[in-house]
Amino acid sequence: MDQMLERLAGQAYYCFLDGYSGYNQITVDPADQEKTTFTCPFGIFAYRRMPFGLCNAPATFQRCML
Image (tube, rainbow, N blue to C red; front, top):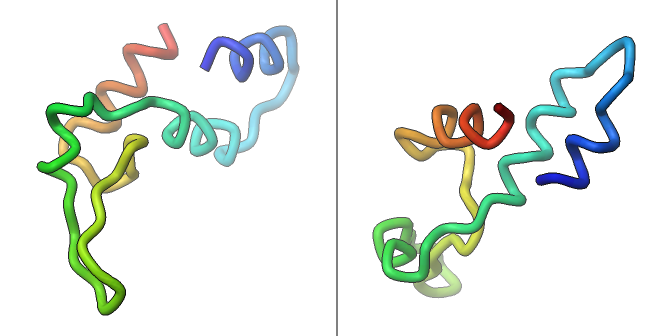
């Protein structure tokens, strides 16, 4: 996350995709990974990084940006 902020510092313009790239850099606590499980034909999986659809994901991302 810090590297992304350093790259963006001093730039005149930002794309909305600049913000999206930060989501996949915030890790989900191992104790909470089971809360992010989903099932598909290939098995049961859990997120290790914060996905877009979590309830408080935008607030968490915003706190990291400050």
